[in-house]
Amino acid sequence: MADLTRLTAAQTAEAIASGETSAVDVAQAHLDRIDAIDEKVHAFLHVDTEGALAAARAVDAKRAKGEELGPLAGVPLALKDIFTTEGVPTTVGSKILDGWIPPYDATLTRRLKEAGVVILGKTNMDEFAMGSSTENSAFGPTGNPWDLTRIPGGSGGGSSAALASFQAPLAIGTDTGGSIRQPAAVTGTVGVKPTYGAVSRYGMVAFSSSLDQGGPCARTVLDAALLHEAIAGHDPLDSTSVDAPVPAVVEAARNGDVRGLRVGVVKEFGGEGYQDGVMTRFHESVELLRELGAEIVEVSCPSFTYALAAYYLIAPSECSSNLARFDAMRYGLRVGDDGTHSAEEVTALTREAGFGAEVKRRIMLGTYALSSGYYDAYYGSAQKVRTLITRDFERAFGDVDVLVSPTTPTTAFPIGERADDPMAMYLADLCTIPSNLAGNAAMSLPCGLAPEDGLPVGLQIIAPALADDRLYRVGAAVESAFIARWGHPLLEEAPTL
Ligand code: GLN
Image (cartoon, rainbow, N blue to C red; front, side):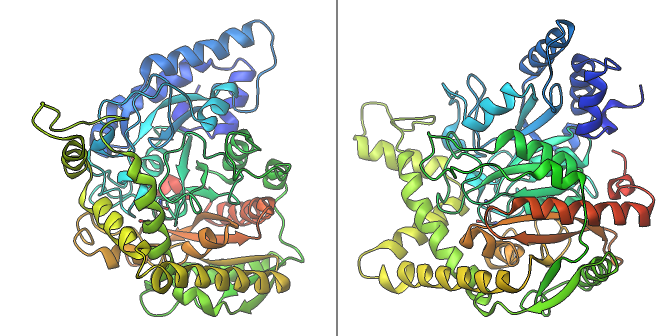
């Protein structure tokens, strides 16, 4: 068989089910690829060679017995290191969890295993998912496979880089303000933030619980849909889990069509701060949607202007509360426990040593915003803005079926460029944050390379809550039109590492 690392997840599953190849061969090909190139990319924090091969052997044994295999059985996956994995380290990109081996699987991990998905290992990320470049990882940055001196996005840069460098055909991300979509955009891959509550948060380390959402990452829209179906669904262990049927995302991905669809272009996304080449590719995508039969409407969402400010009060507030559990007593790192310090001192010394600068910045910001004298002025106002943003979406979705925008204002920036400028870093999520605040569903998929730097540009599609299938219907139509235009998937243009 041709290079097994170049297949899509759907092709891989088919090749395994038909006996054309084995799950073990597929897993081994990806482990070899990781061995050969991940020293350069640094997508993985931990590679679980034994676990991956054992999972693959189990799939092959099942097939040998004639048992039915699920649609993703034997397909390798790179798991963001924010989901707990029984017996396999989970660090969340932080030193504070150093040495912690989770005693249980996250619901998502369990579902992947039940589906016969082969988990290759855990991917690098900004510490506690706070960042847009993966530079905030305590374990060093990840390179963008298109240009290793540039960022692969964040916080899920390990997952996006693993896909773009053909180390895995599937990956998992989490999106609190854009951490699935922005990494997808800058690596030329597909990433979906499902409707809030669609994928269980049980065993997913909490950053900002009212915004956090796990979701699928892949190289094609269909692969993302197959993964979406495998991980979504109600979970009694997560009190905010949606108790409703999972939208028919795979069927939608197989039937891409935008004829008669009303597509809204958000007026507020564009203009100053947006790279020319990003806007060029975005406008082309809108034209393409029109050619494919969609009706294009301009919509205005005036409150989106305040989304970033509201997010940077709400997310740090929730983080300051969620991260209080890292008290040196329960998990991982413990500093100063030598009989000379009080418990409070051990907690303080551990948090000082274990958290990085960005995490500390957010804990301080959040603690301040929640303090009694400022609660109404900051946290309360941010929650009001959140309501206004939700209303803007409701009004827009009264007129259109989906909204589109660039995923992120620029292509991948050089590692180091924004590291000392948090505000510049925060701007990467200008277009993605509103959907987290409102809880609706959104996808990023590749829409070409920016002419000035030859780097991937992402198109964002936004659908109302619980209408995740619309993302896939539109995404699949756009994807096949682009592949027809370019003659191949965009990733074929990426340099081979
Ligand atoms: N970049 C945003 C932040 O730093 C979003 C991160 C995320 O989605 N996890 O908070």
